[in-house]
Length: 141
Image (tube, rainbow, N blue to C red):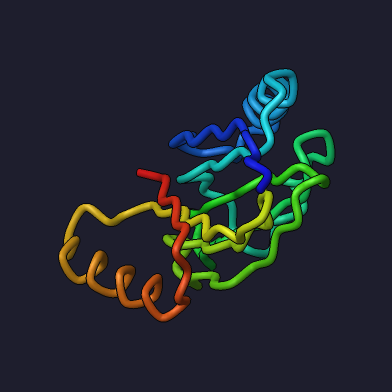
């Protein structure tokens, strides 16, 4: 069996609306040789998703809200097969299935609310359980 080692980074980015900040951060991340980059709190509205495209970081997956708040962006290098399993319309949860070595893995990226956390985690738990995966990695803020 083949073990696959990957470098993953998760950051609360506190807004990526400023083109300057966006360019600086994404280009700096691209130099880090990371397979997966998970950004929370990107504050980009759904219709401006294209501003987050950054091919050097890999394929882009997003969970973005309609308002300029919350929001998750994940970049996965092309070498890793990734499938979107769940996208939260509120921009708080994104679930991807990754093919890593011999076994698929669920990558769950969250940006949890400050209030009603119990309900949030209860719903999240149900979501993850219904996907019936042994390998689960949860990252976020």
